[in-house]
Image (cartoon, rainbow, N blue to C red; front, side, top):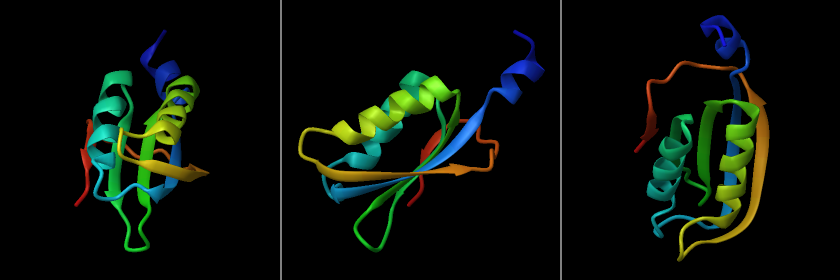
Length: 98
């Protein structure tokens, strides 16, 4: 696959994860899993108790990530994941935004 084909196949999504997702290692879980599957972007806690995830990758990678967001780490309790299509921005890795 050519580099331009790979760039064209890259999409971005923003996820808002609700439930018991702060104070349970959720952002670290997301960072680890995103890096493992090759997704780039960031995750951060929001003031309303949700965790935001912005991710870029292939449709398959983002589908896999979304499934993992529903699972979360051991102590989390995910009640919902809202998904939005986003504009693709370049990131060199996957980060925790404090």
